[in-house]
Image (cartoon, rainbow, N blue to C red; front, top):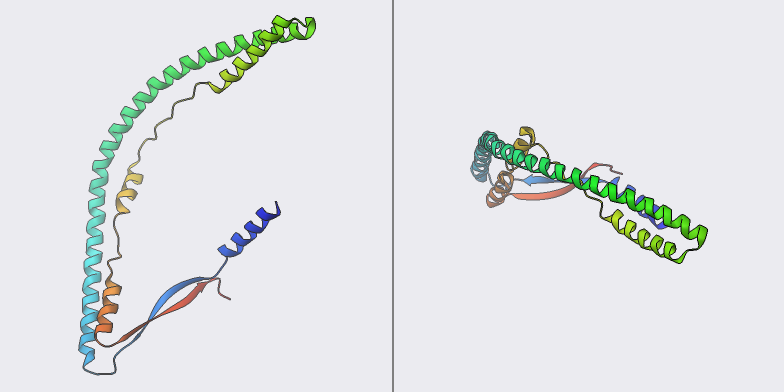
Length: 198
């Protein structure tokens, strides 16, 4: 028990630990001629970001159209699955009634033989009691299971799933950093605490 408390305390403090992000420091080259090169890097980054944002918007629009198509297919699949579920549920109810009847009959017989065994010490009644106990125990593990109800698809869930493939991370910053260094500048990453700092 003490071990679980200690593990809980460790996880509690781990969750409350400081959170860091990496921020880059940019040191431009001293040469004045390099300014044209750096300006070119900025233009390339801006172009990359504009294209990335445009592609992201295209992706979102495309995701909506795809989600509409997926919704039709998933709705059709759901209707088939639900039809199958209704048949399975009817079969389950029939099996459950049969099982309940057997369980009741065997429980009644068990009660009868148990009383006879305890009252009369009749070996046959005691043997039947043990057999019935064993059978009822097995029967309790064979209780029919209710079939799984299929979940109705929603357009919102489908759309969110399709939009999850869209991203605004196009590597523009990494390309800019490479270009900046190529112009003779320096990029120095710094680890900065942004949450739960001392």
